Image 1 (spheres, one colour):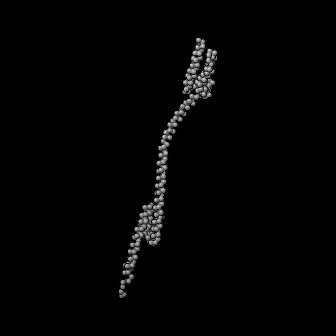
Image 2: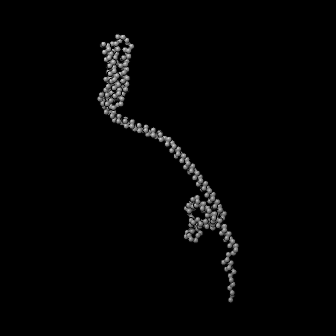
Image 3: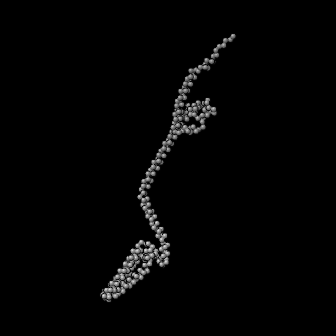
Length: 276
């Protein structure tokens, strides 16, 4: 009966050697700072808003036992996959690239903030200058407002005169009078009447003695006759303008009548003095 001795390979297979335990402890110790660095990198990516891009990227294959398709977007699972699938030098180079990218993104962010701040300050200055200029234009706006009100009132008055013009034109056409054509003679009529009477008086002013009395009286009568004739011609025109409501025509007519009345009195006084 052969005695079965103990198998020499059972005890060494079930118990790890000292070298294997040392390797496992060293690998776990080396993996811990890698995890810390990776976690710090992930925190930086989250702080600068890069985690959304990482989550939107296609998920990397995961070696975890709980996934059906072998894909997962969990950062810890991705980190473990990277640690198992890449060497330390590759991970360090990736870390360096990420640090460079983070610095570039930070510089771009600061540049954008500075540029927008500069544009905001420029826009504020522009708005302030526009406000100052608009406030300085307030007196001009008030002046323009009053001018427009005056123009509106004048336009309304002109509209009233325009509406009454056809009636006046019909009456003037019936009498053979053109108010626009006779406007200047109406204004200058008192001066013309006065010049006629005074000119006749001046022609005889240089004569002295009894022999000049008859000529002086005849000159006055001739001047008054011309003034009376001119007044008879222009009196219908003055009446038409007075009926039309034109301001100042009534005063002109009164002045003309006063001049003619004074001329008649002067001639009457001269005739009475000569007869006596």
